[in-house]
Length: 63
Image (cartoon, rainbow, N blue to C red; front, top):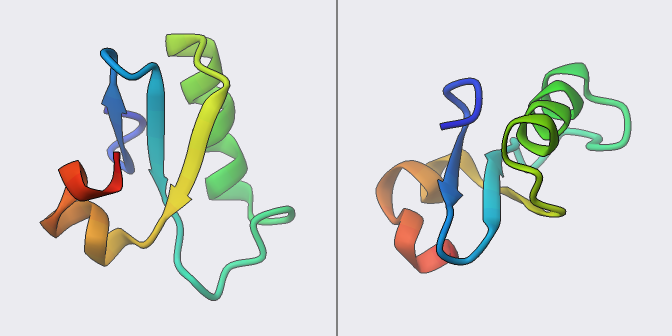
């Protein structure tokens, strides 16, 4: 788990980070911090912003 706002798939070397659809992802501090933490902790470069609603209810569909 990435700062309680994401889902990590070690099998696919992929991290899903929750991001509200209306956020400006290039300038949102919480999102950028979660991405940086995911890169540091897991080393994956495949980090994808996902809708929190979908992440909580159907994380496997997003992989």
